[in-house]
Length: 304
Image (cartoon, rainbow, N blue to C red; front, side, top):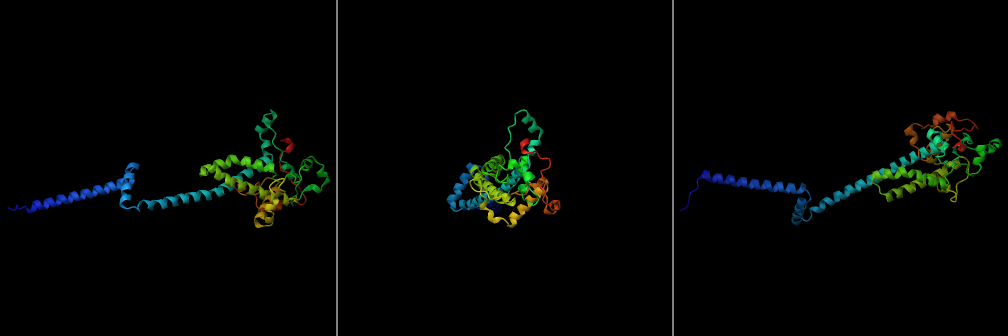
């Protein structure tokens, strides 16, 4: 005897089966999603099963990760260029204005410590004396017999370049005083010590080479040989180029303005930031023929 199943009962059983299949499908989908976003243990299980099923799935993510790391590395490397320039510009500004111009010597704290014998005498830069003997056309008063007998001139007479160059001692000093700002800044950028050093040392050498090719020559003095400092000959061919002409005129303005503007020499920029930049149109009317201008209010090297 063949049992007869009512139509209503058969329809009910079909519905139950469909619901069971849908529930299974939902469970499979949920598990698949969970394995993709789960913590490491579950993710590893899901990934292992996926590799067994389709061996080419996992490698698809690796190029994207490598590309992202490459982009980040390139961005960090490129960001290091303006960062290094900004740090050199800032250090050059501070050194020129506050050390070479003896501005630090005006500080009450410095004078108090010096008076109490707790402040060692700073190395003499003779830069203030250099300003005092420089005409507005950048030539020197070495043709003035009266000047050459003065106390400031006698200090300069000890140096064939009359305080205009970076000798090896000055180069070492510049390296030392840049270290406290350069290495922390590049560490924050993600650079290693060796990477920073590999960029910092050439940048400082280029700065010194530009200075020695530019500064003594514009004051009518001889080139710097390797035995004394970074040689002028390396960049001497750039004299008269648009870059060197811009730097030269920028520094002429520094002298014409009595040392109160355009403190940057090789790395212009910080003057603009702090408001001491003076354009050629602004300083040109201040030029006086055959007149040397001392730095207003500066202490002589003997007072430091």
